[in-house]
Length: 531
Image (cartoon, rainbow, N blue to C red; front, side, top):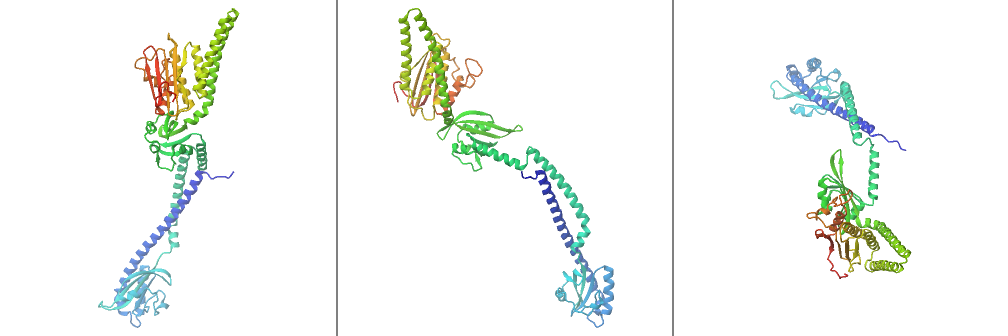
């Protein structure tokens, strides 16, 4: 495996490079600034000395005169030594030297090239490469005693400090700055690296990158739609299945309110409460939505929204649900048949064969009629199995359950699945049968009518009814007249399924003489109408 450099080491190396670079660049700039300041100061000093020279009578009188150098040279050298300048040169109007640190150069023509303006009565300074190196030279014109005519030029030169000499002079300061900068930089880098590692749970950047890629892959391969939002409802992640469900392509700067317009989901996110498998209709498709608030150290950071296609879930569960319904029906029928067989066997043993035969024919005829009715009128075997199972269970409890002769189920209404119908019919029949447990007259009737665009279910019982004022409470999760833990979710589930498909559910209680529950989705079908 390739050896990776740790984050702390990277930060230390980077900070050291930055500190060294900063100190060196700052030192370079500082030396340039010092050099400029020196040159400005030197220029002012040279100008002052040159002005003094131009005011001396001996220089004014002798410049331009034959043998004048004998008077001018001693004066220039004396002032040069006393002022610690590098050279003083007095020129006549023909640029002939009358003084110079090297006496052999006296009498020669000055050829600096920067002296021309001085012969027009201008004083100035310039930086030029002379015989002794780069120097700051001050040029001041020499006027006659009357001050009306120029008779020469005084040149004062002071060598400017070299960069090497400045480095040598300030090397101790640069070294101290570098050491302190490195110490501060390394200390700050160590603190920064430690703090970053702490916030990233001691993970290295490549480990964080790997976890991010793993999370992306996992999220994209899940068979549920995943949407992640921040605390303001802005979407930070949406997997491909969620994009397929919603019809939106995540491209950044998207808010959940743009995806789910006029939906309870947007309001629920603001409440920061958990929601599990709540139906919602979107793009003419039913989904189950779960919302999980995301907290980091008790601070609300956003929400995780999980979308499940309810039709796909029911398709996967329909087979199992249908099998369970059929098994339940067979188990109940087996129990009932055993009781009938015991009765028939007893009658035969008592030599009452006529009564035994009559009981056998009656039971066989009744079951055959019901099975034939379901085969003719109900086109979905899981629903038929459910009805047979509930009918057998009702018989065990002494309740007469009959299916209205006008019942039929041609197709499952759009938006529903067989699993939805099993949930609706099963819960309604269970509630009706249980309500007749302590009643004198124990009867339950059921009418089912379903086509392409409509569904009507009516279940009526002769049970104890619903107490006054509790008609709306029965649809709340956890409410149950049985007062047992784990109950009270059937009607709440029924209501959520019906309302998610723009349907209606109503309860009509006849006091203590029973209850009628109706579900209408689409246009209500009249009794006797086969759609």
